[in-house]
Image (cartoon, rainbow, N blue to C red; front, side, top):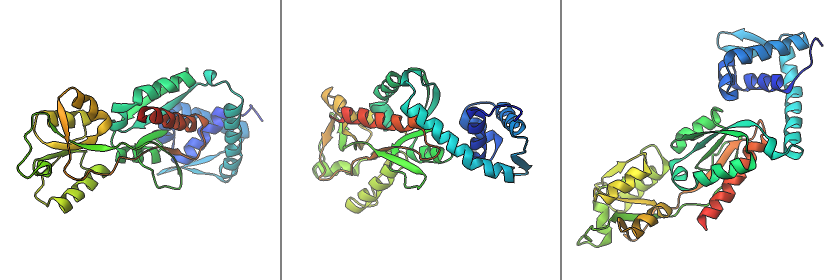
Length: 297
């Protein structure tokens, strides 16, 4: 061989294979496209063989490249085991792309990030807050490494770590008068809820239609804090996480009411791709589980 192989080259090679091109591999690896190209060229020079054919749609493995995949995966798995079993976590360097839903961001995200930094002091963490549908797509497209979202994700390629559920409660303005029909009459007011393209919105709308009727007005919002402010201002009622509503109830800004039913709890998971295996991502998922359990107590 003209030069020794290195793990960065093999890792980059596998990223190009998995993503189907240089550009997407560069995004996943958080490096520039020229850096990806250079690593691939150096790897090809070391092996004395072309690994990819350029096509109109990206790149395609040559026969030598296809043969290299299984060996590169074995070396990647071995390196992963060394990092998991031998390396001191304090010395682990890397980049974790974290996607979280707003409910998590409003609750225990700071404690989770603090716990991650305690375990991996030099780990670079990038955070994206979005709705679960978008986080799911980002994870499957390998644009994030760990998604904490309404789950689990039912895909064979995804591993899910279950997190404690969030109980919901109905809230109205602190000074709102009880309707003549009783607390159930509050549901004839506008119902402020999660964003339209989310599972909680879809389930709540269906339940309201069945219990109250199609005349119920719903006002979806992508911001939980905005939902609470609208309730506080008396512009509607909402079924929102009790853990977030309790401080506002204690402060006398809103109050709970009982219309005789409440939507199902919100169930979350810490989800990540099973391949390539990453002990950092898997450990982060279980740290999220521990932090969530502490928060739920």
